[in-house]
Length: 520
Image (cartoon, rainbow, N blue to C red):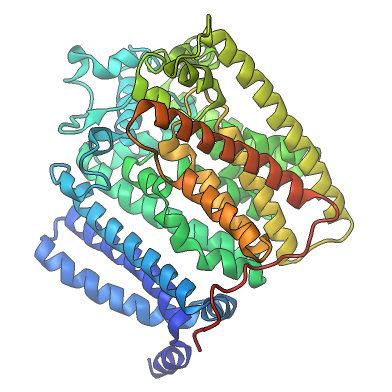
């Protein structure tokens, strides 16, 4: 302990305290939630969490990478204070959210207490309900009205005062909710436990990715973790419990495992991500173009394994229903027919598929918006595939030429995030509430490559801001705002992937300090 005390004293400074405090501030409340779930009274769990937080801070301070500390201490006082404020806001928001996760009646502790959808919606309810329906073996999981059926209320998990979501995922993904149901059949216990697991996994995946990048580039990305968390898409993902953010973590973890020659682990992670959300399949194209046959084979092998396991666990019917009922209706947009006549859903949809319906809201006459939407998404999909082929080939040539190091690893990360973000909007219904998180992470990843000066920094920050918030509650301005935000997400995704993958990519640059005073 004396050695640890000495390490703590020698390592304690503004930079290490900020990062250790941020991580501790997120993880300690999770322990409190977990203890309450296990039956410990809140009055006893709280002091345990505080003590655990203090110990965590004590042990984490010496373990903050020196490059991260150097970058943080090199920021201007203004920039450092803003980072500290971002960290504090996130910690407070997440601690409050923990109360809401333990008791859904305490809606004043949710992120947006006055927005009914945000208070009542829970993606986990759809996952678990589908797993229960699969157990019954009678209903088509992909008939959305089943999740609102009074006849099935006695069978499905009780979720009031929340609202039950529906299921629109491949049947292999049911392995996860089935595992959860084997632990508990109580929805609210699983919801709180999912919140703990989700938050910890999301945080650790971001820190892991920044550590893998390494060097000054990784230090910038690691130091900006609180900013990524402060964005509404990140926080909303955590509150709603949609698997979307964790799929990014699985994808990046898989690609990093491949980079470290841990092919089996990479295949296991990437295969589950693809079978959970489909859009990560764009990384399969990336692997094939780069002739990474072993990685592709391990991914295919684990995909087959998950399929066999799911078939054994949930039976044949979910697979038949998915292929014959869900897939055609997802591709055509018919599965989401409730969206096209519901203004709030049209507005929140950031898929190119939804653009004609938004234009109709402001008076643009379109005879057959579904036909136009299908044409738009077909062109968009081809562009994303073409982008994947081009950037994968470029990076393959650069790596074959001997390029390596933290700058090249960051380049790969930017490309992966751009491809994932763009592909996530391929779905006919891609809500901003969680799909925009890929763009938020992409902006953070590109920051170490950003040129210095207000000419570059100001548009970059404005772009990040536009995709990180939601617009005014008035239809006309809201249509304009969302179309601008969508354009930012699409254009930056394509542009950044093309720019950083180019053979003559510029050396990494870090934004200059705002002001001259720095922390010593």
